Image (cartoon, rainbow, N blue to C red; front, side):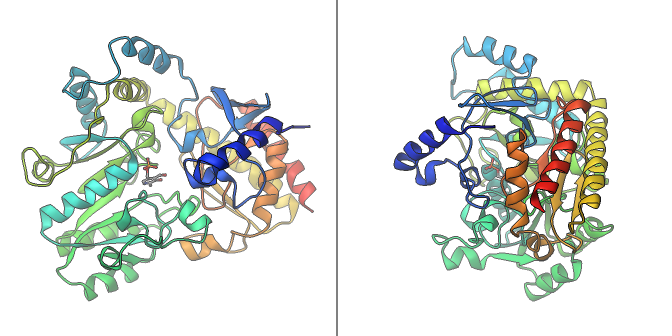
Length: 430
Ligand code: PLP
């Protein structure tokens, strides 16, 4: 039986000094209840908490650990680099190396600017789009999450939906006015918003695969239609690839779906577990960024050598071994089939969405294609399933609005163990 004594003590202590005891809301387990688990260490796909319990990890630090925790080459590279100091605030050769590698791996980009988080990447991309087009408004989709910058906290997904605060206080009406929203997978809703704001829209930002209302796939033609509409209306199409970048494929969603975005944002995998984000595009667009162009964007720690070596080492590994993406997709498919079988046998209503190495189970009788349908699965079954799985050593995202992120360090034995745990958990839920 798992004990959470030390985690409980630490959570009580943490709440005195950190809002809600956590540095990012979803970690607080508010939507599933119970004590968040404090992690001590991790290796491959196994997490160890401060009470000595072990779990098979399906969060992968929300995406970055695509080859598993403490990946030996990444750890070695960090250890070597750290001896040369942890920050210079000046250019380094490594920044050139990683930029070249990213431009090589990702289609349709000539240049990339490194930042420190996915939030920074997305807010900078919007600023660039505004500077480039001379227009102020942009469209985002209900249930998509692009970080916690003011202008994105309108009908946002992820933790913002989990806690029922998709529109955050602190965002001024002026800012909110420039954020337009449409329904994911509903091109007519986008066309309507474009028509109502003719000539005023700088960008449409989209998670090509949505991962912040659970995993939701684009319907056939949706991304193509978005591309066509943007080209016709002089709107920049931004693919937020913070989750999908270097995960779906070497070249991310652009490669996977064969669709060209005008700007692309990255985070998670790109930093190998260190705080890194990036935005990228053609040199024509990117040359509007300071110091070449007038759109200002900067960062004291941007291009930090330790962060860069972690990202560079991981990306090199993915670039040299593209079969890793297939292996990972195969494992995810195996898990999907196994879960499907036990869920079907359980008699519960459910849907499973999967794309590449992202997957979500929804306890609902509705196909999940957008935020409204995803919300039907935000019900009492989810926390029960979560806790039953946790008791059996399976560490799932603690919200029905989040996706699983598989790592290639998962073995088929671990996947079998997970499927068996799901079978027992579903039995226990009856
Ligand atoms: N964009 C997407 C699609 C994300 O999933 C996230 C975070 O989960 C972000 C942007 C924000 O990234 P960060 O948390 O690194 O600021």
